[in-house]
Length: 154
Image 1 (cartoon, rainbow, N blue to C red):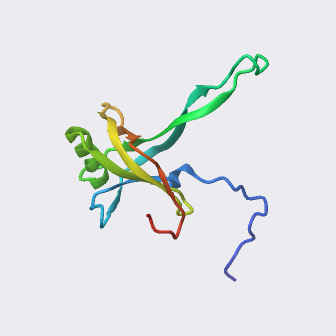
Image 2 (cartoon, rainbow, N blue to C red):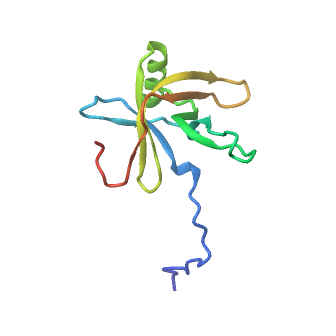
């Protein structure tokens, strides 16, 4: 008799896996985007922050009051070099030519954070005893748009 199913662990974790978060760049046009994933991704980060504005005064009882000021975002990437990779080629092109790039990070549930940014760091490391890797930083220019799974971008 062959096994056709197994029980499902009722104590499964709800954590998501980092390998399922992927950075892509638009290698198409504004009207017809073509999202090219950067190949060989090892680490992908989406960073959001706000400048800290001190709102403290003499009446705050000696406690600092902080307000969020100007917001910013960045995407960082470390990837194994994959030759003829459209996504990585687009990042390199944007850096070399000083042009902005349309990029996105897609979550495993299909949600996307998308925006325009400038490639402010783009490097390759090629050690003699390991694979060649690229790393890049894209600093956002303007807002980061959240697109929920199944919704179209505005």
